[in-house]
Image (cartoon, rainbow, N blue to C red):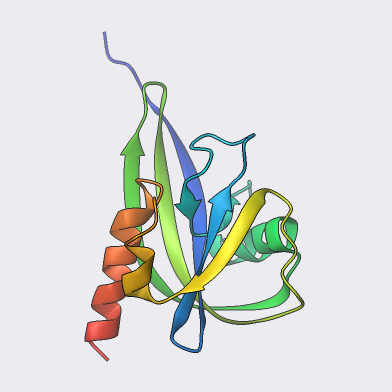
Length: 137
């Protein structure tokens, strides 16, 4: 019998600021509690990835006027009951002060420093793809 897996489309922001990127630590209510990730969330019906990212960043970090630029990459995580497709997008500007709503901490780190954090498995390929874009500059 053929089982059809549900696909969940999710977006993540690689927010740049002065040669650093933002990573956030998942809170105790989340799957993978304590892991670090690029903030973001599920794409809702009738949203573009960019719209979803702006909404999620407002909900999670209380930032607005988010300037989403380049698509970075997509990673896929297969779970027993679903497949997560996580798209990463570069964010180069925003307005407001970061306030955590569903994370316990955040850090501005260099891409190399990010490798020393316990990153969520889906975010590791996104970090690698982002680093490749830096080499092409």
